[in-house]
Image 1 (spheres, rainbow, N blue to C red):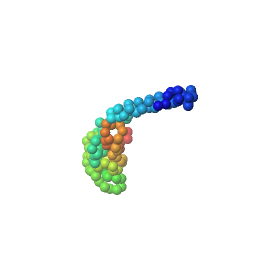
Image 2 (cartoon, one colour):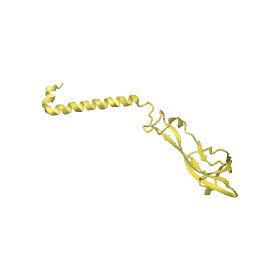
Image 3 (cartoon, rainbow, N blue to C red):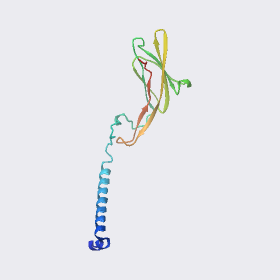
Image 4 (cartoon, rainbow, N blue to C red):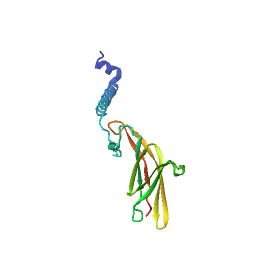
Length: 162
């Protein structure tokens, strides 16, 4: 075993202080790592509060919500909708329906682009409003207890301008 006096003689007074400081830093770093490893399994909420783990699915969904906002008023108490998979020009009709509420939703396959055409009346004229968006499925591996899936996009706005 090497005595303190021998190390001090080899390193000099300043060298021993540097070595002592380095050992303290290593112990501090090891203590932080132990603390982090003990708390690693806890729920890690994002610091900006932007992710809600209650909207996450542990099993990978193949269908998700497409949300469409429409204008419901006295002249348009119901709004006919045509939902297309892809652009309207592709003419691949996914659903045809009529909504009586300002927010309409339907489950559709994820990771696809959808378009919608809403039909409104304005006196004797017909007005068409169109919009499109991709409904994406994303995986979250850092913000919740376990990895999970959530939907991104899929919001279409075909409300009339005021």
